[in-house]
Length: 187
Length: 104
Image (cartoon, rainbow over all chains, first blue to last red; front, side):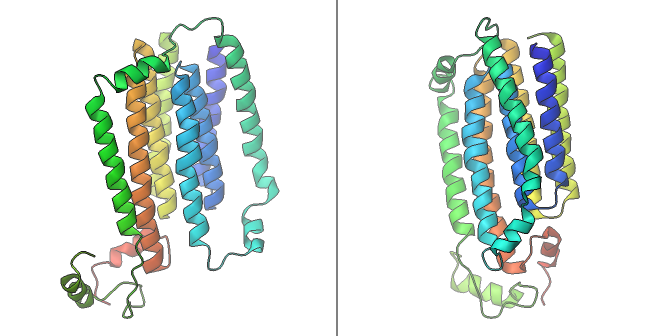
């Protein structure tokens, strides 16, 4: 039973991962990536890590990919119209992901039904919390530093930075850049 | 966890990682390269969870949370770079950046 569920989920994950790197439109690729991560989350559940599965859905598919969607929408602000969105994202392109997502949902219901009886390799969230705040305390602190550095990096990189003498290829002339760096070394 | 399931999970993680790697090498659009990086991180996380399930310990899930953190920081910085690339080159083609050292 677990074996067949595993095969089906693995097939969905591989198919959607291939679709991610083969699709031409960014929004469709994102849709397929969400489906890949839902499939991987179901694999986590089948492997006995339900808390990791919930985190994968909430943080990965829910937060990180929404960041991607924000950036795509931001980049297209200048020229995008409703017509272009419609052309990029016809209803027919939603069919396959929705179908596979339904398959994943049915699998999840089966797995819930099945795993209520026997939990051989189930690792409870309690054990995870205890080890996070016990032996792995330093790692948690390092993760918080990493997130802080990511925040500062993102803030610094996305500051508006326009220069009147930007060339045709969008780059600053090297001499200008050097002068600017000397004048404003914090940039 | 049976030995069969373990072997199949390892193969699945390897193939997912390979798909992400191929995407990273083949696509020249920076957005798709970031998506391929996400795929590769997912494959690594799957392997960690699998290892944790083999031993019945929580360490695999701890490593998964660390992978999640790394992915968050990487996406923030990567999307910042992407916005700068779009701003300066008016394109997401990463090969444009090879003109970086030229002076006009």
